[in-house]
Image (cartoon, rainbow, N blue to C red; front, side, top):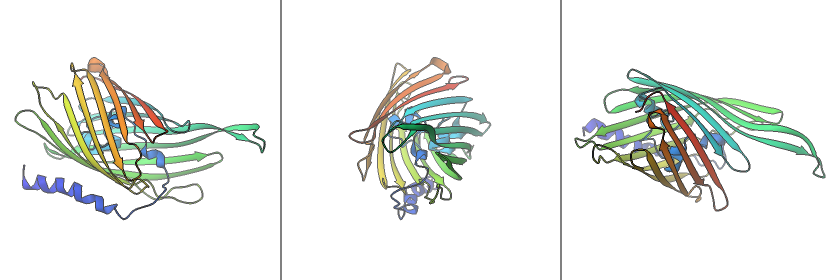
Length: 306
């Protein structure tokens, strides 16, 4: 590994200090923290080093440079307190680059009631984001990416909008035996404050991770990732670990763990099934706290196998 490569990777682990002083206990647009991929969610969400498909637009836009075929995805999430999140995305290869766009919408139907609890009217509460991103393959091993987001929030008769951006880097190297080492970092949700009456900071976040996929009989049936996440919301700094095992080349079992200061989002688990060369369907269950869990279901399609 060259000295330049070592320096670039080391910078990823020094960068959390840029967010260490941020300790806001609440943020605007917290819906940006809801993951759009059951695959990544089951592995702890710290996959900045592994992202290489349409979901890279969320986890690390640098991974868009590795998209080999046109891909489409849709994810439904059963979130907390009756909230549901829908997300869709498309990614396209373009020579040494890849680009994509996505949309996400967190929504709930609410009923307004009078002083004695009788229903008066029903209205929608929702938050959404539309994202566009680009990944560039700088060299064989180094990739860079960035994305922009338009944000909107609605609450009864009020609305708010804003903008945010992400910046990502990824390093990948294959050994002579075929094993893959990768490192990645993404600085996410950078933008001006947003809110209905009082402005709040966006949930800025820095994700850094390392991943290893050993080669066994010309395949990589195992993936292990470890990561660190620094946020400006109440979770502060947290550590993630995830593992995926592949059986018979088509069935994927996944597990993840997130350790944070407040103890939230501890255990994660899920599975995936390849739909031959057409794509994959994934499921994940994420424990939020001792009383609440969330469920993710993703369908990812592509024009040819990768």
